[in-house]
Length: 258
Image (cartoon, rainbow, N blue to C red):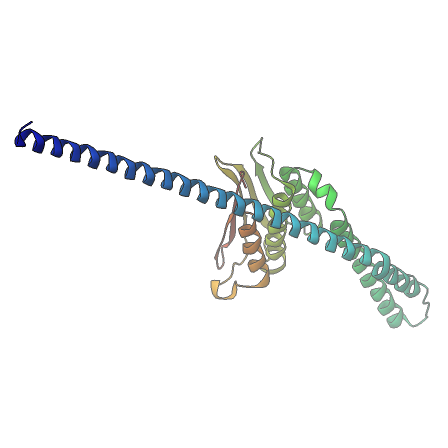
């Protein structure tokens, strides 16, 4: 073998070695990238599982707290108000102005007792909320508003909705209740429009009142903060738009895969 052949063989061998080395490096990089992606996916799944378990724990603690408060209201405060109402009813006087005042106090006590009983029932009966579907919960809440607040409600819902977990369902209901209560108490609205819709990747709840609205500078209250926090905890998006003299619109989107 002459020198030219030896040089050609050396070059060819070097090229083969370099190609093999390059392939090996590329294979190592691909394996590393694949393992890194798998590791990131594992971390994401762990975070999702942790968030879900944390939400469930928070819900359980919240349920236990609400049940204790509801039972305390029923057993102690409710009984004391009942006695106060009975005592007021037993007061008899010939003084007409005083009798009217006593009757007024008795009426106030009776109204407060009714409100407390409704509150206690709502706090204690968490199981009923968990077992019902979201459309039924929204419908029942609207019926309560029409009965108690004398406010008209235009409700529309998608015929079939994907089932949400009990935790997500309760959080959506609480957000809706907060908005409705704020609308009735502060906006002086006479009409609430509610739409519950199934979208491709989740459920959207839109509620709008025809109240007086508010300025965004004064909107960051405890209620709004709670609504935002609850929406964030269930992986949803929340927005509140208000125009003074026109009304306020709440939009809540909840992914069904959460």
